[in-house]
Image (cartoon, rainbow, N blue to C red; front, side, top):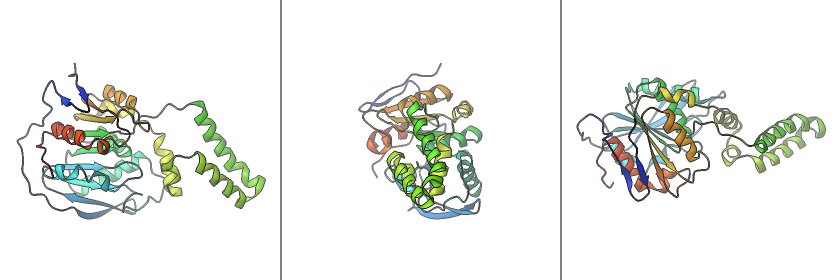
Length: 291
């Protein structure tokens, strides 16, 4: 039976047994981040490296870039070689030239692991980056995994959602016939701006197609294959990936522990940065020092 954990935003983590790695503390010189690039599927992807030691991969969420981790990176880079990635279509990385899904994004990180000769990394993924961390660790060796407000559970949609989606698709087909191409594009864009999510509205046409593909992918089937210890760090007011998703992941992943950041939303690792620092430091068994 798995140990039971209880957390609050003020207490942090109380553990019934140690979840520390079985290796002695290591001390390495920390270097300033250095940008690098590599090629995958004909496009250039960018990342930076900071610190030395075992590798820790930082995987950002949709609409963000590697700079989202700037608060936690100084702590991690004192103990790890921290590789911060800009996913394809974000930050300074090129957009894909075809419609990628979670599979292609994961393969791009697997390619980076081969380029850097990474074996059994620790992965930290937020939101969409959590999707990639889940799929990666389900089929590759990983030392530990941190999922913070991670995507991966296909949401249950109300009937109104499907009405909105399919009426929009119908309009895209009918309006050019009824009012002509130019006027149809104007009306469709107005409808999209009113009903689409901010992530969708702010994306390019290619990235909109990719987002539509990725949000429909359910990763529950691969979660039981994750053998690494997993920390789930979640905001209880997250409406993008609700706390119920975290509880599902905790149930399906064999060695998962959940920390709830009370009063936080989808960016709990930033909204309660101190709790996140204390929790991840304890999970990774590293000394927490102020940067």
